[in-house]
Image (cartoon, rainbow, N blue to C red):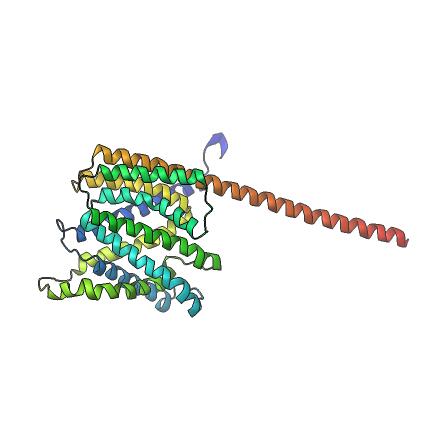
Length: 350
């Protein structure tokens, strides 16, 4: 704060930059979701091949990542042994490929608004899997919060006008695989001190995803595409769509790196409400009052969860500061004792 209680230029600049990062991430995330829906929906672009679309994304992203690291050398690769790659990156890549495949498939059967409501279950899945893998400790109040989020999503599902069992199954599977991937990143990579930025992450993970997706693609979508003589690859549509997906990865890193993961979670809630409004007003999807009430309940549960996490992080930081202060105080005391001992020795020698 400067004179008269006004904010300094540096603080104003920091606030403007933070809001800019949030706005860029919301815009790109919004664009990718709506663009994928447009391509895959049978009533719009009518290209219902989610595995192929995901493989196009992964091919584009891995090619760009390889060029940026190997050719232009703009990013340094992470030192990683073959054993670490096979034991850590490969399982994460497999889960990521399944998550992307199922989530893209859900756009064929469900509305954008309902998919966003189902995604509110992500904290529930992450916490539950974290408890199962002993990464999180079981707490009754947290589990009660998780149940409230689940209840809200269940109410939203009950009020969904375009409910499709198979579509819901696909989206819930995508949430489960993505939650497992996030927990395994903490266990297999972060715990070993390996932190991947978006470029290095795509460099290592995208080719792995491509390999895993190739297996179901050969049996599920390739025969259909081969027999569809009317299909023509639209470089403008798929090129811009893939570029948006790549830019979104960079935006995630920018937002989390310059602000925090919690900021992204809060921004995600804003993005979800915008998508629901867009789905209702532009795409003309039916959004019922029961939908909104259920998602409102889930939204409150997610907001409380984020608030609890923020309090926990602040408590840990405060505890670290106290421990550091105690350690410094202990070292100073030892130095003083050492000095007193030397003084006494000198006195006895005299």
